[in-house]
Length: 254
Length: 245
Image (cartoon, rainbow over all chains, first blue to last red; front, side, top):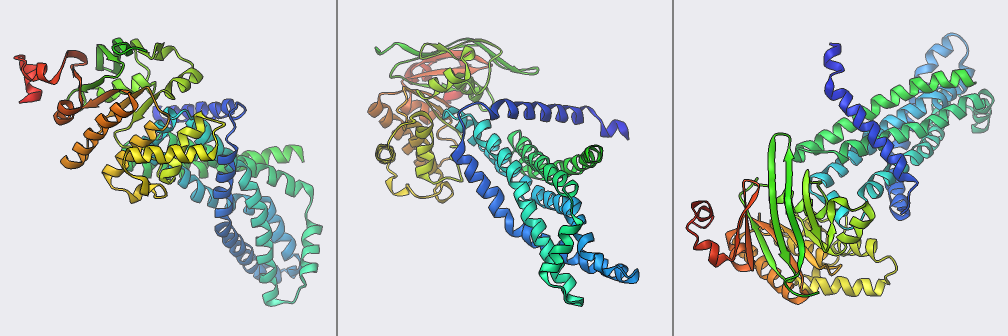
């Protein structure tokens, strides 16, 4: 079993990804800087994911409130619902679920886009046109993913809390001001800051894995499908591993 | 520069993928203003040769001199500068499918000519589109074009930087006989108009017959023979004859 899991190819892939990441850090600070493409990618990656992230975030906040309610009522602590939902969303569920949705949407689209560019020789064409394709395609997408995911998480958290507010108001009347007061009273910097910082790492993981899978795509159209699929799987696994590390680091610091 | 001056010199080029030796001490010279067709069977290493010449692949050994510079020894920046003088037409055309025809043509221009004005860019785009007879496609997407039109646009993109040399990778593959013949005519026309040197990789005998000033035959990784179409087609050597019969 272990032999199958940690076979030669697995280590080769991790090694290649490490080299790819190393190349990213070498290229990112070197001119020429592709600002125009970076802003275009930020728009594509950030703005165009907003609807999906917003919808899922709203449902998440709403459903969590509804699911919690029976047990909270049973113990007579239904007043704690806003605080409980808020801490769950801000600390864990918001960043992780948004990152997983982001991996599904953006990781697969980056993997498929770069993969099809690779198999149709568009990346080679870029290189012979005097463009560093790594800088133009990879660096811009990874940076856009790294900086757009935290923005999406913040927006998603806010929408989740609004969903929760509506969920609470199905059974009782609670003003938005009072709901937010309970939310803010329950939150501390130790909840919000580590959760916000880890989203940069999640975004980076989605971007770098999507680019890595697409950039080294092969085997024609079949390879493009494989790149998109494995980009999502690998990025999702990395998100959970990074989350595991983040919780340990946060526990040490705060 | 004078005619007959070599613009590409390949000496003792070797390239293998594991046990599979693709190029085995291959030699080739392309002179200024010449159309040279490298003929070879599918899988004989023609595309590997052309990719080594443009620096997309690194040879195992040998010398590749393009416009006086040894390609394997060039830095990334030097290679970029050289590539501005060498056009490359990909077998699959390699048009950027997320960009319009105009953006495809502007792309290399914007990378190499940093301070060029929009008016000059527009003029150049229209000029090269006129050269390939497709001015009306300027705002179309590559997916809206036919195979022959895509090939012409790809050719226009290689022409926009006014290269000294154009490398063609199987320019007629995948096209019907009539469109293939139109591309052959276009290659000859553009060579005369822009006075470029052309290295064409192909297995298409019609292309070799009508477009080549000289033919080099790539067989078993070596340059087996060179000569005009007339010389090679009358050869008694059975290996050469196999291409013409």
